[in-house]
Every structure is written in structure tokens, then in C-alpha cells.
Length: 349
Ligand SMILES: NC(=O)c1ccc[n+]([C@@H]2O[C@H](COP(=O)([O-])OP(=O)(O)OC[C@H]3O[C@@H](n4cnc5c(N)ncnc54)[C@H](O)[C@@H]3O)[C@@H](O)[C@H]2O)c1
Image (cartoon, rainbow, N blue to C red; front, side, top):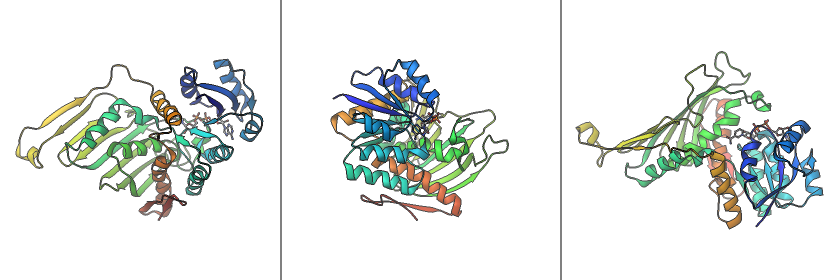
């Protein structure tokens, strides 16, 4: 199978996708779509593309015949690109976050169901080696059921785009990484959130760059999130700092190095001083690019017909955490999250 790709959006993240795609022998870029010609030309030179450049997806679809659209625009545009692509008969691979509103994400899944085409969303942090191993340890059950998950991210970023001007710049762009990882680590589906949002003193943003949230998952695990975009010093990893507490043990990972765990065979053994089992999940010597792992999974899923890890019908459960958080902030209350197999796929109460 050969992927004939219309590539939309030539911003800062595009090189991670193109570095992977240009190494594959099953991919050909047949057109670029970009609103900003200088950005398109920059990538054209970097990868020696000879394909045409369009400033609208509609025009590219009218003039070209491909089978895959890659959407690397930003979250306010994803709905229009993805639904137009699906309805024109294309499969879509796209960057996070899926959409900006509940109506948008419901409409995107409706287009998937009505057309039978695929839409898979980039969540590269799932493909970190330690993340996979922490999840395996949690799901193995040796520590009992997961009970409490803490995730923290303290960073400072200029997103150098429209994304800087969102009402909640960190929540509406980057938090999806943390939320998707949280779901993945404990295999949980979100049921509710209460989110407190604020803008740090000295913030780069006009909108709120920070927030604290408590999510409830369907497996009874509570996820406590702390995010602060604007930290002066002592940054955390962009992959977050994690602590997973299970019935009989805990795992901690600073998001950079090795992860550590301790657990006992019976509840209460730590307290009684009974020897416990401990270990380390080593950081691999060579850390793979996260996008490479994710893109391998995405392309393989398209080729084989199997579900990708981040198929849109799974990913709606992560974007739901963002959209429910926005509702929680605006209404200053806990918001309930519900999913349906048919339209409307996501309902917030
Ligand atoms: N997975 C990750 O780790 C990661 C990291 C950074 C960014 N991202 C995501 O990738 C996406 C792009 O981020 P970026 O940093 O490259 O942003 P960016 O602002 O640098 O680039 C987006 C590009 O899309 C173009 N564009 C906007 N509307 C368009 C349209 N209708 N048609 C064609 N082109 C259009 C813009 O001109 C711009 O060049 C965002 O959704 C962002 O959240 C993901």
C-alpha cells in the first residue's frame, strides 16, 4: 500500500512528521497546503519537494488525487480540515488536540462513522518506553488496583502562534498530553472533573496559563493534575512528573530518568515493616523520538486495518478531559463526562 499524502500545515512541528515520512518507502507527499507561503517554501527547500503548494485544502482536494491527509494546523482549524478530508474520501492523521469544542469533536466522529474513513490523533508521549512499562506494571495487577495518580508539569513556553492567545493557553493546547497519559497509565476513562484555573504572576499569556484539577476515572482512580506554564526555574519534564498509588504499592517517575516502584504482597505490610519488593524501570540508553513510535503505529494501523492506540474514538476520551475542564472553569463546578457509541459521542453535564 502506498500513501499519497496531502500535507496541511508547515509549522514548528512539521519536521518531526516529515523526518519520519521521508525515511519511509510507502509515502509520497503529493501536495502541501499552507496559509503562510514562507512557511511552505521553507519546508519545500528543506526536503527538496517538487509538489505543488496550495493555500486551501479544498483546492488541493479538487486538483490532486491522494488517499491520506496529514493535518498539522492548530486546534481551532482541525475540525474544518479533518471533516473536509474525511468527506472527500481521505483517511486523516493529525496533531493533537482533536478539537476546540464539544460540537466540533462530535461532528468529527460523525464524519468518521458516516464515511467509514479513519482519523488517528498524535499522542506521542504514549510511545515513551518508561510510560509503556509503568502502564504494564500497573495493569499487571501485582500492586492491586490503581487508586491515585498525580501528574505535574511546570514549564515555560512561547508557543509562537495563535495558541498563545487562547483563553486557557496551556489547557486548550498542551494539557491533552498530560490527560491522555493519565488515562493510558491507569487504563481509565474520565467520569468527571473539577478544574481551578489561574494566570501565574509574571505570565507570558493574557489567558490563564496554569491550573489545578481533580478527575475521577471509571475504574475508581483519582487523577490530580497540576499544570503551570510560566515557571521561572526548576522546570519539570514536558512528559510530566508522575506518581501512581495502587492498593499495595506505588510507582514514581520524574519524567526524565529511571522510574522506581515499591510494593508488598498484602495490604498493610509496609506499615508492619514486612519486607517489600522494589525495583527500577531504567531509562533506555537511547531514547527514541516519540513521534517515530507514534507514526509507526499510525501507518501500521492504516495498512493492516487494526485500531491504532490513538484512534479518534479513543482520543475523544482525552479531549473530553480538556473540554470538560473548560466547562468546569466557566461554571465553577464539577462537570460530569459521558460517552455514547453513537452521536452525540460526548456529552458534558
Ligand atoms: N505532539 C507534540 O508534541 C506537539 C508539539 C508541538 C505542537 N503540536 C501540535 O501541532 C499542531 C501544530 O503546531 P505548530 O507548533 O506546528 O503550530 P504552528 O502555529 O507553528 O503551525 C501551524 C501552521 O498551520 C498553518 N495553518 C493554519 N490554518 C491553516 C489552514 N486552514 N490551512 C493550511 N495551513 C494552515 C499556519 O499558517 C501554520 O504555519 C498544533 O495542534 C499543536 O498543538 C504537537
